[in-house]
Image (cartoon, rainbow over all chains, first blue to last red):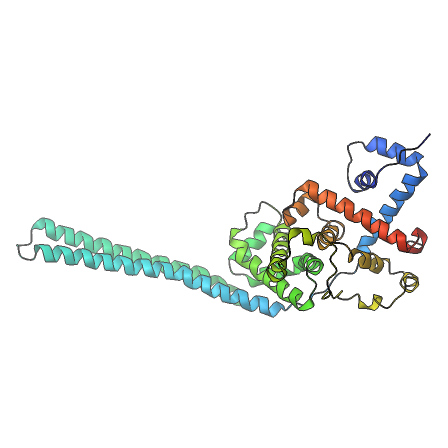
Length: 152
Length: 194
């Protein structure tokens, strides 16, 4: 009677994990010298992978660190530039706001409402600017404070 | 150190933490680049570019895989992209044996002049295995080292190579079978593993 041997895939599956039909494979291997021999060959091969030499690529760590420092500076500049642009924008808007109202009502006697609007506009603008300056300071300390700590 | 802690330190500007990441993962990156890229100078440039890319991509890392798996996938994709760009190589070519004239087996040159007897007498079974591996397609070599040397699971390899897990398994089965066939065509089992 012709013996049906296990395939290489089945033997590998048995060796490298938890095959679904583990009991069947095990029984067969224990009774079949040929499959046992194949299993032993794969086993040796699996073990020998640990003896394959590790390739060495002589890369330059300095190049990497220099490049990431450059990227860090760029990121910081972009990060800090945002509140600056927002601040300039708020200031320009505030000036425009004041200019429009003064221009429109300068011919008439300034009504209480106009004065109030101008006053509120200027106050809001100043508050916005103060807040932006504070944000800027906070971010600056956050970034450079950490770097300073590391340098120390 | 835990991935999250390490990444947060790097994002906070700690360069030493990034150097730690390089130290922890350079072996994996070198294995992938070495198996996929033949030219020594290109290998060097690519490893550097990969770590720079890792640094630039860290703010977007979502911790859905291990940090090393994510770095492995960057190394794999960057190397494949390089091959596609430089040589217009397709995925099918990556799975071919295609011997490359530029191929420089770094560190294994001492074997080129040796006869099988010489090699075996020196009991360099790892070198023999490596030499046979180098005749396999680049993708098969990469999968073999990821599984057997870098101890990655099928799932992790699938994430690194962006291949379905079933495909990874079947490529690995085929690669091992081929390797076994090649070894037995040149040596007896006793010669290899006395």
